[in-house]
Image 1 (cartoon, rainbow, N blue to C red):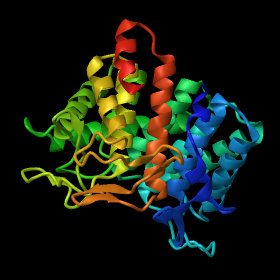
Image 2: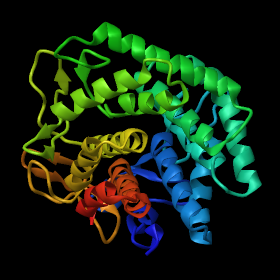
Image 3: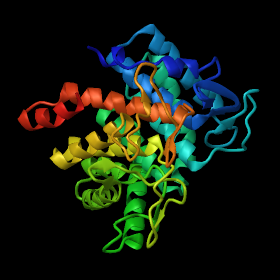
Length: 360
């Protein structure tokens, strides 16, 4: 069965109108007053391009056209992209945050590295060229990591003429390493003095950088930081991410809740990248834990994924689930589910087959 056939996009379509993907939901109903974000529309674009690449059909092309059009509209007058758009189609910010720029360029890289019709790829390249000066000035470590991931996608796809983006990505990888050296201690192998949100994108970016620049110390730092994060988010062989009710400052306790789907999604993606690069069983075990978190193997034994609609609860709390079904949560689940299906179809060999059988 094709991945696109077993991945329902009912809730994605429910949350999408002619402008783009609405940010939040009240239970399963779009909350129009929340408007739209470039972050979410970029994630949706990335997902739909990946699915279209596996099975190009008109409904998927229609979806990704909506999200790409949103990114084109988000292009600022100066540099970079806006992020917050009101339901009345008026921008609510002068310029978007750094993470928004990184998410946007990562989605555009997915477009440019695909087999989409020429006009789509031409627009993606134009938007990447437009945002390049902003990317060079990013200070957010996560934003810089998204840039590395974007460049890695294009490098693996063999897209040429991207030397300026490669330069920005290499500098970003070096900055990540510099932050790791300054912040890490023997019992704290991390880039910052606390663990916050979307933590796994940092080692993930360095796993990708290590493929292109093996002579640099990127791989060792990627392995050390990923192992530390994996240790801190594994309890009794289940994935237990850092909660956003206080995060996890060094020397203090880890916040147990509110656990966010984006943490499971980004950790699964980083584990997949490490598996692809190194083939070590430990990384596939981590991937399995993160994937299973959506399906009830978590600290509350509660299923967050709605497998029939493609929706996902917004978080795991001490009292149970957050019953709203917002865009970010849904996309974290759908991307992880897509990745799980890809792994099942692509792995070969007895070790891989044994590891993958757990995902069935």
